[in-house]
Length: 114
Length: 114
Picture 1: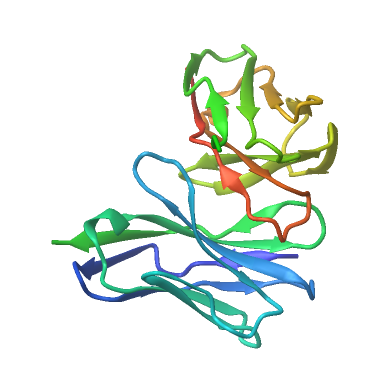
Picture 2: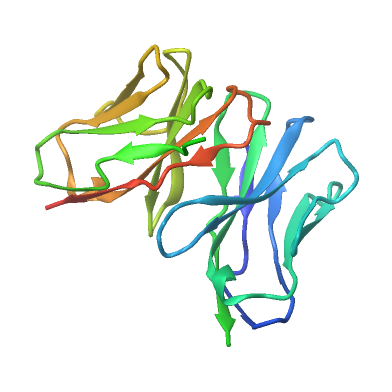
């Protein structure tokens, strides 16, 4: 069974500060991919960043970076220099090699305080 | 390149009715997946279509069905609507059907069942 766990239902960060969102997962597949999606109040899911499990190097996208710990099955998202537009629900997702089903965590609601 | 589009954006139905939702994937994408999002259950996988064939199905009753056309556009149908079917229905498209491909989401269709 494949599962994704986000243990922080809510997080807050001061504008311009750094925040880390946690995600752990479990999978029996050897080849898999991890994603962070952002869902603002408009409800459109937007890809933030993706990580291939076979790559040791952590993915980065501008102010967004991940800390991928494969042995610990941990995949956290770091947002640097937080902006008001970063306020949203963040979902961690796991994609495997069998079929195109993504497994999502329950989400972390991020508030950015001006 | 245009993103994933979903129609209609909002629907109000009554119990017992049936509803059809439509999804147009990004041009060139052949895989279309459907998810149901509710506050209580989070994001749940409904089914995935690739080249007009359903390749994967989530744990939903047979009232939920779908299909994909030769141009990769997809529809999902829910018959005999129940109050619990009220949700945001998200469609996502990707190039291929393997979980390594990033899924790009549409804006969703919000269904309210009265």
